[in-house]
Length: 285
Length: 131
Image (tube, rainbow over the protein chains, first blue to last red):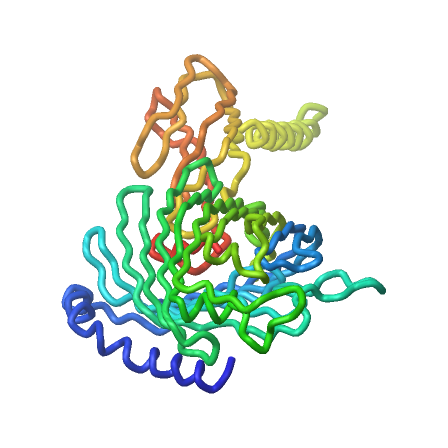
């Protein structure tokens, strides 16, 4: 992360408790018992491995890969703060959040998270390179991962949850906004944790141009200049988790998505859908 | 004289016999729940497991399998000395089970199914994030 991102996170951590003073006081009046730091601090760390299939939307020579993955996840919770960090060969990322307000069914969080992964001429993931390998996206600028801060509005009704995330990039990547809406349903099935969701993203013109546009100095025989402008994508996702023992869980997920015509027309974007499927186990410390 | 010399042997034998009988009695009393542990993903999530109870009482009688806190009767047996019972355990917390003698209403034996979880963080639904 760059200095700008760290500054944003520091600011985030500093201001968020002040924003929810009113809500905190309400709770504190009811809770008179003394609570130690460790009563409110929770953490989890996991190391996982498994197999995955990725088909990225970039128009790379090797845009779908089947292979093995490892991932390392760390999450902490303290009072209203939460932080989840994922380092993985899988898509995902990190999220920091502060629970600002909670009604009976509505909730508001301040969040900071990575939404778009950067890429270079090799694509998002390092492809299998042979002797005859030539990157299809050769000559493009490197796009950086973004880091966004914004508000997340949630509405929960029984086993349904609707999230609307309105965020703005504070890193030195696209420096613009995006919106993510997702409706999630949880399913009960013994000790399985099953979640299915459907959603859509709206990307500002600046963000879409940054990631999927072709600038004048990127033009080659294979691609012409292009600016997608305001764009969107739709996706459906499914996650399943099952406790094998007190330290091991089975984890599996799938995501299928398609981008708007404005993005599909980009010379660096493939028309094939974005697909991510993985299954594996995680050791929980 | 002959009989008086036999008395210590008889006492010794009877003591030995009593202890053997007592041992047999202890062996005969048995109440187990398998599996003893149910693992959920997170604290607060209902843990589900197919639990099999096995019991053996010292004598024939009427017995009931009872959940301790709610005092829910799961199953009763009439004029039996042993039994098994399969039960779909579904609870957010550990539960104790009792084998009760219906005649005397006395708790004969106790067994427990412990609920534990993998993740320590609570991660409520507001944090659902699929990818």
